[in-house]
Picture 1: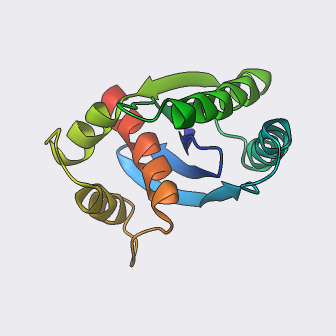
Picture 2: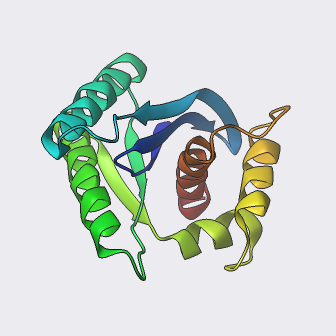
Length: 156
């Protein structure tokens, strides 16, 4: 089974693609989609749509695992990221992918067994579980891989 994990964002959207077969995880591809900060929102969303559609077409995942949003303070950022998240879900739907969503708490618990794990602990577990030499960079990429790995742990 091929899973694409997504860490939604407007400026930087992280993606990570893994193969999962009989408790074996393998990194396929990972990276980020960047948009220009001062560009219009609709242009940024179009970049995300076009780039993510291309990534999905090239890698042919079966499932999309998306990190759910959690914002306590910045409403403007939440709105912007929500728009990017909508584009992500549209891309998945158009590619006929099953969509699963996980909260940051669920991701932390799945990877570390501890809901208050910090970013560094999550990144280290991504490295260990995928048998990588280094932690994937930037953080958005590692977070997307964590979302993908979480799905494998939920389905067991």
